[in-house]
Amino acid sequence: MTEILVVKSKVREYAKKKKMSFGGDAADTLSKEVARIVDKAIERAKANRRSTIKGRDI
View 1 (tube, rainbow, N blue to C red):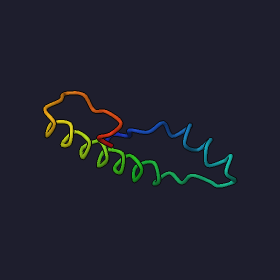
View 2: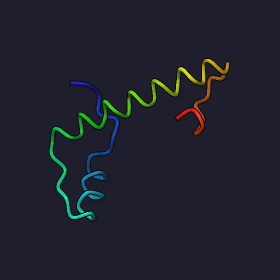
View 3: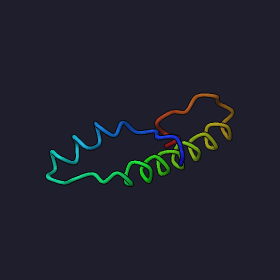
View 4: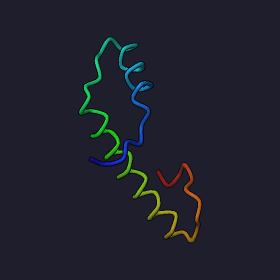
């Protein structure tokens, strides 16, 4: 199992407002997707010789 990068309670709350449920396995999948996005942003920031990820990197 990977490290969870999302706050499950907040995502569940958001899904509930949209009249949906948030399955237990969804948090792990969502965290993997967040990690993929952040990794891509890191590559872009490094390519621009920065050590800070900015909104435009995402």
